[in-house]
Structure formats: structure tokens, C-alpha cells
Length: 101
Image (cartoon, rainbow, N blue to C red; front, top):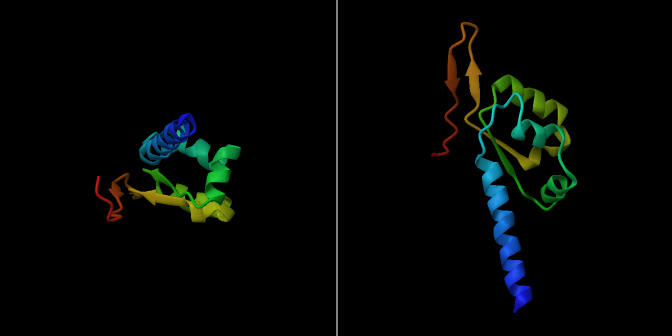
């Protein structure tokens, strides 16, 4: 019984971490999301190998293009939402990705 309880708690914690990271909005130019992309821990890489997809939020279209080029071997494990398109005059339009808040 202890074994089942511990596995249940471990699974709940893992889901909490994944869900929290999936919706954590941090300045895309630094912080948590960029670190996950450019400095993934062995645990992140293992989750990606097992089919987990991480959702990254709020990047600019230029950042997404750069990430796709630089992290090409990992893009199957990445999803980008609310991509921001910045025009030459500084107007920001957020891409409608069909995902509800």
C-alpha cells in the first residue's frame, strides 16, 4: 500500500510540474521558458524522449523561428502558443492559435 501511495504522489507531483511549466508565462527573452529550451536538464530531455510536449507561451515569431533552427532535433516536443508578431512600428499582434485561456 505504501508503494501505491508513493507512486500516486509522485505521479501527481510530475503532472503538477508539467502543467505548471506548460502554462508558466515568463519573459520569453530570459527566465524559465528560455532556460528549458536552451539548457534542458537531463530530466527534461528524458521526458521529451518519452513523448512529453512542453507548451511555451508568449514568444515573438522571430524567437520561435530561431528556436526552430537552433533546436531542430527537439521541435517535436515543443508547442508554441500566443506567438507575438511585432511590426516595424512596434505594434504587437498575438497570433490566434485556437487555444482558449
